[in-house]
Amino acid sequence: MPRFKLTIEYAGTRYSGWQIQKNAKTVQGLLDRAVRTVSARTDFELYGSGRTDAGVHALAQVAHLDLSTTLPPDTLRGRLNDELPADINILAAEVVPHRFHARHDAVARRYLYQIARRRTAFAKAYVWWVKDPIVVDRMREAAPSFVGMKDFQSFGARAQENDNRMQQTERSTLVLVDRLDIAEDGDLVLVAIEGSHFLWKMVRRIVGVLVEIGRGGLEPAAAATFLASASGAPARLTAPPSGLFLERVYYGHDARTVSLRAATPISPCATFRAG
Image (cartoon, rainbow, N blue to C red; front, side):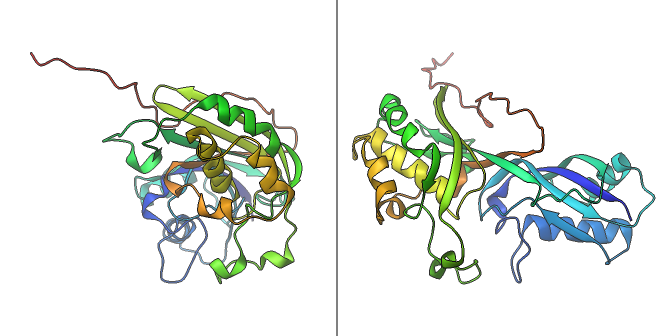
């Protein structure tokens, strides 16, 4: 039985996240259904690199699929895409050794968050529109506090916030963040964070704290304070899921190239004249 590595993009707006759930529409659930339709089989394994939550998007989610089929990878990709809705798309399919595991072999993940400085009619589902002025230099001053091996207990959601999640007390809150970059692209402020793994809601809470610093509601030194001791402030500042994208999952010797750009660009607001 061959093992396929699938690279998948999706807009998460209509879904209750990646992972299959009872009585909820998820990306993995629809992909599972597509595999059953295309292959007429039920004895397969579909395993993702990690969860994305409701409303969160992916530019390159990775999954492995164990499926008994004679279809070449590109034919399989095309037939699965024919069964999937337009907001889920398999970018690539390739045969990989059975020792490859989408989750366990991942060495790092990179997330992108898009903050809009203006109201947008077209990209609402892909940004967080912040009405207040944001001073990006203040955000950049705080950003280094998050880089390195740190205890993110203030930034990870508690288990009781979602009974279906693994008990947070059973997991370490230590996370290695390799880098955190902030850039401006048109009317967007982009935050990209790369690390070994991330706690539930951790990226959105980091973004929320950075935005509050950019607004002037917190001093840049607050980031280090929240890491030094437990605080409920990051939870209250959690950014919405709409602006978050799983940008890349890294394996083995993958090159860690950095090209910070918008997933859904927004042109700077302009003044238009009639006629």
